[in-house]
Structure formats: structure tokens, C-alpha cells
Image (cartoon, rainbow, N blue to C red; front, side, top):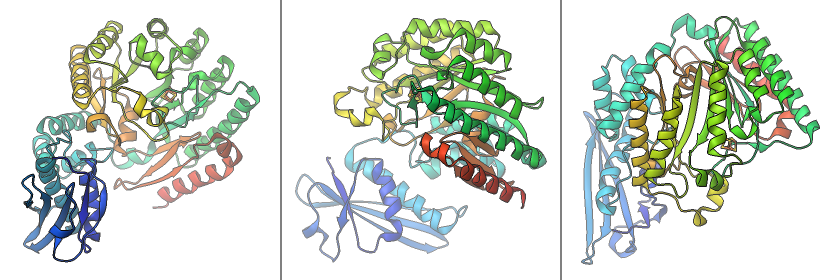
Length: 504
Ligand code: SF4
């Protein structure tokens, strides 16, 4: 039935957040508070009233009731009771049980299936599996726990367990984790702005003095980060130049940046040096040669689609043929690993379009394939023009992800990292596939947050990870002018964060 909002009793504050989380899966906004005994007299016909009661003796039990008007004109109520097993704190258990109950009930009331991820809303679902594996559960037990406690579909829980197992050899412990870090360098420019982009990407300014000012600040940032690594005896296991599209810089600026980054961070112990080459509308033979000469080990080429009509729609100034030519040139340069990014759910695309994109990608035979689900993010042109754009529905997008999983399997690529975002079509996921041995270690570290990451450049995050996996972060500003004008302040904040990590 059609429901447009929910009401809570006056005394529900402690559980309002959990109710809001569950209701968000059904796009139900909070409508207000109903107080007093006569709910029926106050409840509008297109809303539900949600009441949760905690009873605790041996373990925590939550009873959830959802009241709604039936078509026949009398008040109906679904009730569900759930009990915690005792492996979490009482408050966390209550919040989880409220979500679990309401997911089941609202699914019945609305007839809407909110997708395969149950009540999990976080960006990093595999962290839960790693925690369970750390506590001695087998991968099968961990997957079963995810299904029982979070209502995750069995097939997704098994996928998470398989990905976690593939990641385990890359997660360090003890002294190694204290000494190995990843370094991220952000370049905030792109040749044009894509329809769905909410990243702090700026179109490369025509005025080179602005770019020079940015590069001057970035080089100071790089030098300070290198000094930080030296002070604490840290080694960069992975180095990642992302953005934006770093290759949108001119040939000379790009080659100089590569040299600076290499000199500052790359050593014999560095296992991976990635550059987001991103888009063929700004790659040149000179930039490919510069990457090969600098010892770049992984390049990401991100067509997002191999459909000409969609490239135009999303704001790309290049053709499918440009992507193929660029890929072949990078392959010929000898750089060992090439990743390709695609997006499921792009405007006006069908499953046939995705099948064709995958066939064209298979012909190129990349070492990594990253499959994103379209997310309609605030600040993107897509969010602003949502009504004018025809997007594939949730089912079609899920079908596209399934096609991509089959294609990856046929190419010998295994799923090795996975994360989720808000506002994704069909409440689905982003997933990275790799040829065994060609996994992007940086992607694993940044998502699982078990390694310190030193962030350099606008919008970069520094994440200081303690031995018990506790995390403190500092963020550089997204705005380039703020970054340039306050670079000393942000360098100091990063230094304080890392100093605090090594003072414990
Ligand atoms: S290439 Fe990436 S960062 Fe640049 S505009 Fe497109 S989506 Fe945004």
C-alpha cells in the first residue's frame, strides 16, 4: 500500500535514529509525533504509526509495532519481536533490532523490496566480516551472521566473505602495520564535468598562473608529507595519484608532478604506484611515456560506458574509439596493470548496452574492472536535472551488475573490494574485480581502513589507524583557493594527527 510518512510516540527519542534509518530504505519521511492513547483518531490514512518497546532480562528483546489503515477502513497492526544474542552492547543491539523489525514489517506494509543489503547502510560492509573473522568465526559462519543479524541476502553475504578472504593477505598487523602507509595525492582538475560528478573536480583553468599556484602549494604539501614519513620511519607501500583527473595537467606539469611524487614517496618497498588517467580526452603520448618512465605500475582508464550516445549524455568530450586507442597505447607502454571503471545505471542505458560495453571491454582484456552503481549525489548536475533524465530502473541496474559479474568471471577477474554509497540505484554496491595478483592494494586499504593513509592535495583525507584499528582523520579542504591559501594550516593538522598516532 502507498505510505507517505511515519509518526512516532512522544517517548521514542532514543530509537528515532534507528527508525529513520529503516524508514529511509522505503523513502518514508518522519511526519511527526502522536501522543495520547487514541492513535486511531490522529493517524492520517497515508501514514503509519511506529512504536518500539524494549524488554530486557536475559538478553535484549525489542517488540516493534506498525499501525496503519487497512483498505477496509479499520486500523491494522503488524508486530515483530527480535532478540539479541549478547555479542554486542545493549544500545547497539536495540538500534539493530529496531531496524531489523521495521525492515520486515515495512516490507509487508508497503510491498516494496529495498534491495539485498538488509539493514546495512554503511559504506564498508566488509569491515563487519573482518571483525567476525578476527573473532575466530569461519567465513561461512561470518556470512551466516550477516544474514541473521542484518538481513543481508545470502548471496551478498557470501560475496562479502569471499572478498574479505581475498583481502586478508593484504591487511597487516603488528610492527608492519605501524611502518607501512599508503599515500594519496589529489589533483582536482578535469577536462570537463561529468553529469553525475559530485567530486570537487574543477575544469582545468585556461589561466596557467592558477594551475601554477596550485602546483606550488601541492609541492609544499608533498615535501611536508615526505618529511613526515622520514620523521616516523614510515614507508609508502602504495602511492596513488587521483582526483579529478591528474592527466588533465599539461604534459610538462604532469611529468614534473610524477617526478616529485616518485622522489618523495616511492622506494624499493613500494608495491604499487597508481595514476588515474581517467579520460582519453586529456591523455597524450608524452604523459604515457612519463608514467612508464616514472615507474607507474597501475593506470586507471575510466570510460564508464562504451556507448557513444551515453558518453555525450554524461558530458564526455571523447569517443569510444579514443578509449580503445588510449588503452592500447598504455598497454604497449609496458605499465603492468590497467584498470577500467564502468557505471551501471547510466541515463537511457539498457542491459543490452551494458552487455555491449562489457564485450568491448573484454576485447581489451584489462587486469582490473571496477563496476560502480550510479548514485545520484547532491551537488551533481544529475541531481539538479533529475526530472529531465531517464534512468534505468532498480531491476535493470541490478541486471547490469549481474552481467558485469559474469563478464569479470569470464575474464578471470575475482571480486576483491566492495563498498556502498548513499543514494545508489536499487540500494546496490560498487565492486572491484582483479586478476589474482593484480589487486589494487590501495583500494583495499582505503576501504577497509586498516592502514594509515597520508592525504596530500585538495579534498584528500589523512587517516591515522591505530593498532586496534581505531581511526582519526583530518581533511584538506575541497575548495582549491582555500587549500592554496591555508596550506600551512592543513600541513600542521596532518602532522599533529600523525604525531598523536605515534605518541601512543
Ligand atoms: S572524470 Fe571523474 S572527477 Fe572528473 S568530472 Fe568526471 S566523474 Fe568527476
